[in-house]
Amino acid sequence: MASVVAVKTEKRPAADSQDADSNAKKPRKLLPSLKTKRAPELVLVIGTGVSSAVAPQVPALRSWKGLIQALLDAANDFDLLEEEESRRFQKHMQEDKNLVHVAHDLIQKLSPRTGNVRSTFFKDCLYEVFDDLECKMEHAGKHLLRSVLQLMESGALVLTTNFDNLLEIYAAHQGTKLESLDLTDEKKVLEWAQEKRRLSVLHIHGVYTNPSGIVLHPAGYQNVLRNTEVMREIQKLYETKSFVFLGCGRTVDDTTFQALFLEAVKHKSDLEHFMLVRREDVGEFKKLRDNMLDKGIKVISYGDEYADLPEYFERLANEICNRDVSTNDWGPPSPNGEEQQNGFNTQKSLLQDYHS
Image (spheres, rainbow, N blue to C red):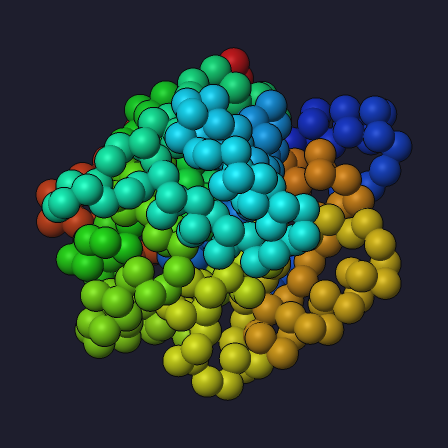
């Protein structure tokens, strides 16, 4: 394993030198309270900012508004909406109504129930919107996913508000199978929260490959919300681990995220979570930092541009994972050693990709 560390640390100076030549600026320093965390102490929260960095050509990945517009365009292309209905949805978007509610209403409209059977028009629209994501992934975005996968293989948990499966697609190309979970499967969600499914990605709004699991309002997750065992384990994560919000604009205001993690957790200011954001407007940045501290979240600037995020997060992942490799102490091995073997295989594939 010593050679793994050596290969990675040798790569970094060349990259730093190249950055200095091309950008003439110093990379942001890593916050000590974050870089000294161990991977199993982290829950990575992946937002739309990550997906839009990975596949910027896909407007549906950039924001709620982009997703709704793409679904609306697909519905119109397939003649699934009357003109009046289409105008009404378009007007609600222009008026900046609650976009989650607009999306929920559109999904309901595209999923009419006839007798005991739901139509699959919503599924058709989803596949039209997210078609061929694999070919639309860009190099810089893959670097970001590589760092997420690296932390995941070292013990970090991952959840996302996104419908796409970009991380799962990337991992498959690295020889690691990640399972996509949604909140309709209580048993698997419980196991994820108990850290028995480390190689799984929890999509709290669902994933497009399973349209029946897509729900945008907490009322749709009544089974999970009423299951005291599941909720206790989920909320324990927010109390005992550090959440790292990556590419997340308003995730903490997301009604489903609040129902799962925030509403039942008291003394949030005593917690230590992290939010990586771009520092564009100094005033807005300071305001966000002050507001998030009340929720126990430290807002950290990774740089002034979106392009700074992959490099910053790569340095962070390397710092954390190299420490874990040197101590070899991120938790008990699984009975058959499968988890450690998966981690080893992915470490090798990451190195191969690193030199490609």
